[in-house]
Amino acid sequence: MKDFGLYIVMTAPTLGYHAFTETCVQEEVPMLQLREKKPL
Image 1: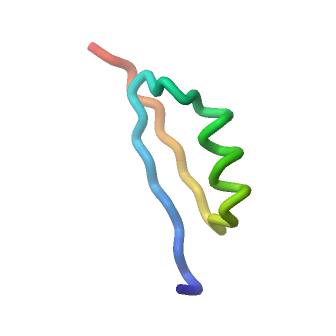
Image 2: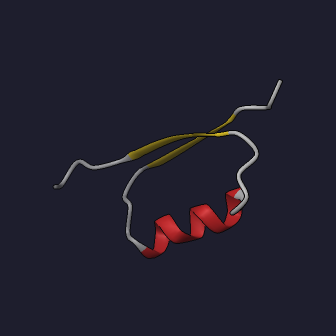
């Protein structure tokens, strides 16, 4: 799939944003958009 990307909304992830992004880079996800959602 050539035009594949990933859009994620994360609320207090246990893995953490940095670790998640590193995993996406290792898996060669060509486009990534993260959105932080603060818990109520």
